[in-house]
Length: 247
Image 1 (tube, rainbow, N blue to C red):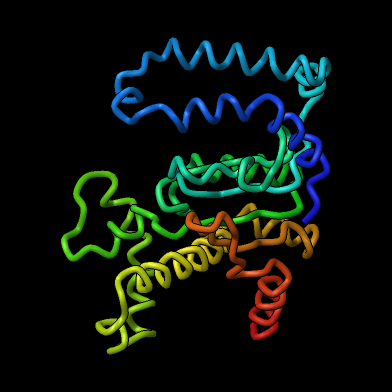
Image 2 (image 1 turned 90 degrees about the vertical axis):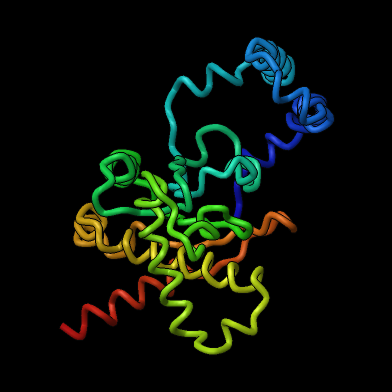
């Protein structure tokens, strides 16, 4: 996958952002808990100044508009930053995040994002990206159901758990917990891709152009920094065509 602007940004990251990143990573957790938001505002000013030193047109170029190459629907987990792990710059990725990267039929927030991405920005690809060590998935797998809004939300992810349980059968009880959670994380991504394909704006877009948007299912491995493809866009397109031919 080629992100040309991301390659340009690598120099900026090395020369400017690295010292700030080092400052963040080296700050003791106890200090971060009491850090004033004014400190973050100061970091913003330092970052903006550093960008302009490397590229005087950095910000003025962004004012012209955006043309992202994909819509990223990911988890809200602070360790999974789409632009950073894809080595992309501003304007390359349109992003929506929520707990456990869920595509809910009754969520007008994500529906509005998807519609804008497809109909206005005309992104050719949509990625559902989950990640291993997902707290939302682990909560959905717990014996005791989480209460409140988060519990209601994770009932959707609970279907991925049920399908994994059915598929594994007796093997589930002999499987290490971490391995079991990885299965559910991947199944949850596949489930959300399926939900995405059922949305009216996606089906309408396919009527106009059967090849766009392509839907992809990815899982980010926090321990390695690498992405695993669990559903390729072309494979999913072929599955949809086969399903339609049956009717």
